[in-house]
Image (tube, rainbow, N blue to C red):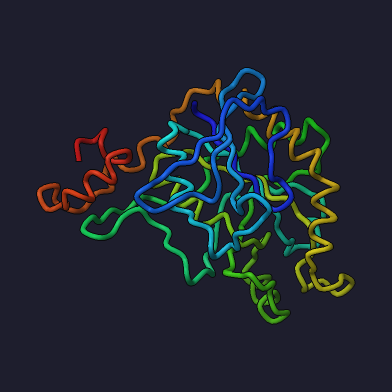
Length: 285
C-alpha cells in the first residue's frame, strides 16, 4: 500500500473507497486521530484518515500529527494526498477555488512537529516542503475536471482554533501569503521526516476577514462552501490516486533522511533506536 489520504473539514470519508478493514494503530507518539480505513480505489490500495477524528472532535492544536504520520509510515504509505479548508488572502483566490500550495509560513505555537528529540538529533531539508511531482499531478487532474485551479503559493498555518483578527489578516497579506489554514504545516514537516511524499489540495471557503465586501469568516460559511465543492474534491482525489500510484518515485522526498542524522549512532538511546526503526532502519541507524 503506497497511497494515504488525509481528509479534513467537510471531507470525512473517501468516495469510491471499497473498504476492506479499519485498523487502529498504536505508535511511539500515541494514538492517531482515528482508525485508518484501509481499502481500494479503482484497484489501488489506500489508507484514509480523518485528521479531526470521527465527528470532527479534535481541534487543530489537539491533533496528534506525529501519531498520524507515523501510522502512515507503519502502513507502508509512500505518498499522502491531503485535503483541507483554507481562507483566501488574495482577491483572485475565490471561494470554491482549489489551491495547491508549495510553501508554508509557521504561526503555530503549541505543537510537536518532529519525530526527533530525546537523544536523537536530525535536520531534514525543508526548503521545498511539498512534493512538486504529486502536486502537479493533482492540479492537472483538477483542471481536467473543470475546477478553477491555482498551482503554487504560500500557506500560512496559524494556531487557531480562533480565526484571525483583522490586524493579523492584514499583516499576513502584507507578507504575500496566498491562503490561510490551521493543519497542513505539521503534516508536511513530519511527512518529510518520514520520507513520505506530501501534497495538499486546499479548498478555498472564504476571504478570511480582510476583504472589505466580505463578512467575517464563520463556520457556517466555511461548511457551506465545502459542501458545494465536496464532489469536486472527491473527484480529484479519486482520479489522482492511480496516477500517483503508477509513477516512479524518484523525488528527494524518498531519501530525506539519508544525510539528516547528526547524533553519533553509538549515543542513540536503545529505546529511541527501537522507536524510530521504521524511519532510520534502512540506513542502519
